[in-house]
Length: 147
Image 1 (tube, helix red, strand yellow):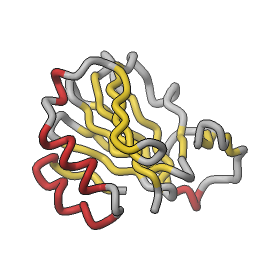
Image 2 (cartoon, one colour):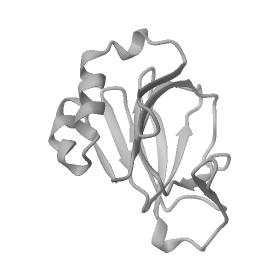
Image 3 (cartoon, helix red, strand yellow):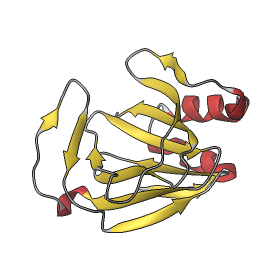
């Protein structure tokens, strides 16, 4: 897991061959002007979703992991709290290959506030519970194929 300021994002480009392309898109695009929906940058490997979340408590946020994709999450309209637990500390659960997701019961071990101007990167080994906010937030979720 990585949490940092948006201005430092380029420092992480070497972590995956597709990160540079994703980061170039993010830096060249007025993210706040994008409507909710999905932009495919590279079919089956790299896409950007703009979402508007609803209010969610820690108890409502479910821990999740992905096997095939890395998440880059960027809150735009407000602070989003994201839960985190190392996947190795969680019991085995059923993986949904069609949706590339595994959900886990219980609360996260730690919670981190990610503000506008920041981002979080969650790798397959990072269970995360995103979307915790009293008001909901507009956010960007970049899905990057694991390479």
